[in-house]
Image 1: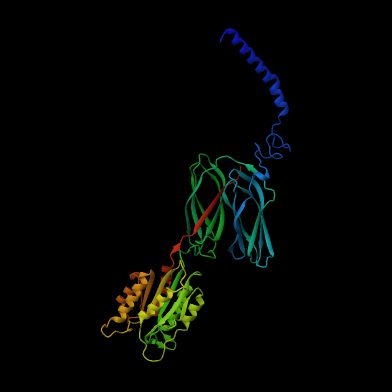
Image 2: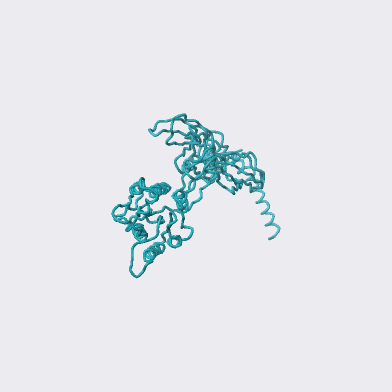
Length: 457
């Protein structure tokens, strides 16, 4: 490139720069309206009046409404004193509401409004959170349901800042039967301190139903600092936090041979105590469990005393009606009692997904059925049936009452030695049946959810 051409290009560049500086830029500044976001007008890149675009405020159409995860829950804290909780999801990953009013309405069973609970809260971005309003008195009124709503006009703001990292560990529920207590550890894993942390705890039973809630507050949590947090309730929850991992179909098998009146005739003892203990056992079963009743002497009852049913009152009624027959000698056919129970638990009345168990009680040795060439046939037959049941994954419990039993035989009938129970007298039966009910119920742990929210600065 020669000197003349370079000089021409330099002149051209100077002319273009002057044009941009003295004509284009002033014209752009004259025409362009920068968004002020607070002037009451739609200008600049705003998509609405003072909202959208580069404004922090979002237009209503740019934010999805909060989602109620389930209907509000009402908890009775103590007689006449209640708390209420709403569980909410904000589906907006970068939008929050820094301040809003809320309203709970509490109704009775007739749908009559009892009271309203109002307050102020905020909606964190992209999170599930809980709104808790606690310790209000309703006097003699009994609440049945609640509704929840925010202000109609939520003001959404954009928030793309990184959220502080809060970790909650070591959650544990204790003293559920007396004064429930939840303990946990709250840790700030951020590089900066966090202030004004609200924590709401929700206790859910193992089926996912909320049974208790409370709240607490941490004023300051320094960087990398951990603090313990405790929530307490003045009395046990109305529903237990733990439940059985699976329902059970159980056969209650009872000896009604003549020896069951050896300790008394009116009422027959130990039969009366046995029946009372068996009814107690049925009362320990859960609402999803089923029960069947089979009594036996020389033969098991045919038809059986009560077929497999979720109506546990049928089983209890059948137990109460068990009698010792007066016609002839009453022998002990443990094998037939087990067979009838095994058959019923294998019938179409068995619920798929339910565990199966047989709980058999006797106060004597097996004497039936007989086989001329096998003096041990009564026991061998019972063992054969028990092994069939166990091979079908039916748990088998055996209870020996009194001193006239063959303990080693009953231990073999049971699924294991821990499923065999010896009751020297009928006084031990309630405790034994309670232990069996506990063994049948493999507990699922309660679910402890703790929701942290950091109040806007």
